[in-house]
Amino acid sequence: MRLLRFTGFSLLEYLRSGRVTIEIIAALSVYAIFFRRAMESAYFFSVCGIFTPIITLYTMAAFISLGDRPQGYVLLSRGVGRAIYLLGLFLGAVVIVAGTYGLICLMVALTNRPTDLSLGGWFLGTLPTLLNIGLLAALMLMLSPLVFPTSWRLAVLGMIALAFSSNFIGGQVLGTLPSPGRALLGAIQALLGGPLVPAFYGFQLAVTRDYSTPTAIANLLAQASLLVSLLGLSVYAFARRDLIFASQ
Image (cartoon, rainbow, N blue to C red; front, side):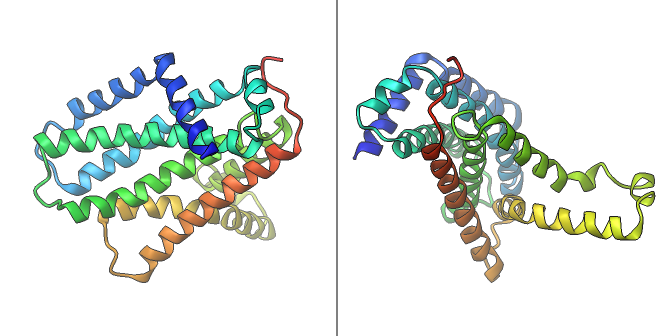
């Protein structure tokens, strides 16, 4: 109950600040630009799969800015607890992004519903999309000044960049490396890129909505497990560090 109350308080504070106007304008703009034409379900979920991470970046950053300020001392001193404080910010951001996605779905369903999209198919495409929203929000929360110090944030960002390094390390650059170096780089990329696979496959699963193979269910479980792991790591790190807010 305490977590739900603090989440509601965070949502109310976010609405009062007027920041939710950005999500509303973004949803209306995406609908007007991309969804006023005849379309198939794959197109709908492809656009939503690109739009939701973008709006998650803004919304989660806005909630982190609300939490990363001296007024947080007052809430924490009244017995809210660090875990509830952190999870309340996360849930508030996810509710806003999910509501933005839901607004787009409602407008499309009422005015320009894809002919090949049933209610069940809509649910099957929405589930991995919402899990990806949670994954990105949890990653941003973990990399916020509230949770990780600067050194750890740089280390995690460096590992993410190394996981994607195959996109910009190739051709002549890769050819200059000796064979052991190329093998080591490939192993590191595979190791660091492993946790990113559920998110990318979740996007593909939302577009295709093909649950006929065990891989689809396994990927949903992998998305959920990774989400719990990121939140657990964030709560653990936040509980063990001193409360030093950005404006202090």
